[in-house]
Length: 553
Image 1 (tube, one colour):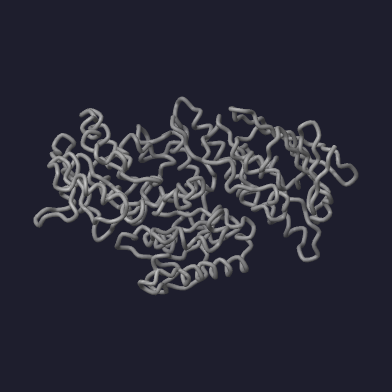
Image 2 (cartoon, helix red, strand yellow; image 1 turned 180 degrees about the vertical axis):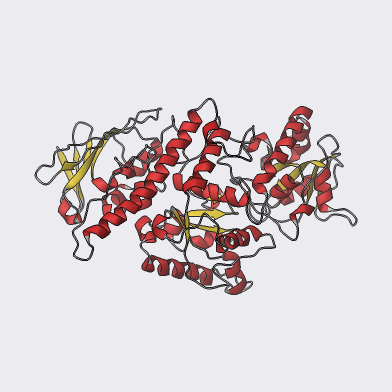
């Protein structure tokens, strides 16, 4: 047997097997209750998982394994552990068992990723720094009787009652989430829908959804248990305020709704499932950014200072390293601003309009925020002619900027009366009237991947044609975008007319009707209504706290 060591672990190789063993558990100041995670095996070309068997064990006298969990993780999990052999055996504190149970299970739900954020072997050894939110995430059903409690640490500063109280709160939150996961999975396996849990009002159904039954149950579970805590630190205008009438309006409308005291809020942070950092990147640009300098340092410094304040005042950021916290912004610079803190960038839920996967947007933990241009009443943009009465094949009007629009304008501006592409509309023509009379509305990216034209097309009953690379569409966890939109790669812009004309009349009518059905999910109401845009944004955050993506049915 060959041994290789460092200050933390020994690597023991024998019979094509790696054993990672803590040299001295006492060095971590943990009690002697440990769990052995043993025989984690990768099977070539196949991802499966076996049900775990969890037992407590005592390593105070013996270092022989006494409890086992058998997992066949997917390759992403395996590569994140940086192993190249068939077996791995790791001793872990009993409190951290749920971390490595956070594995992909193809027979249950199509999860975006195996881990909320990847962990290397070195990070796995630092047990006292494993994010609690990630530890608590598990795709297996958890009840009050089998929730793994954290080993009690001896401390003169904390009473036994206080430790037990904190354990109970964490367990309650995680039990709620685990029950919700189980309920969603059960609804997905039902052949008779989720009639038992149907409520009055709108019931999701039809082809616009990836899985209408699971979505309905997930939304219901969110309404039942989901709670958000908003940090009160900070002063306006940089915090607790946002724009409400421009291209960034969704940022201000969301912050404003939470400031008004939505029922999903909790004043008790111990009961929250997620924590909102209520600063506004748009307001930072307006008040602390120096125009034309393109220097984001003041904005980054503010974000860094804000996280420093709440992490010292409250235990929640440090407990999860930001994994159960979220920010929300529609400004193009929000992704770069979030880079100032690696935990904010890599762990936290970032709800962004600029949902560009080539610039670090991670759909397994980040959510897309729909971009909406609000200038006045939304009623002006709603409506449109029937599918049969629409005379224009495709329409676009907008500035010639970014990488996509110059290609579109070059190929189609003034070329074909069926593909009406304009930089600026001629006098006498109404932008919204044109959208309401067009069959397809072209939605190319501008400076960034997002465009308010997608929402405007939905309002106008116009089938959106998405022309964008690396863009994660809004609410794509639950919405089946190919059922009501056309997605055209940049290379096919010259063939745009051929692509649209190849769609049959019946198919177009079906898509157009689905666009109209879709409107409720992109409508902003005051106060919010069930299944409207505000609540769909909440549902996107809820799914990422569960780390669940609804599969196609």
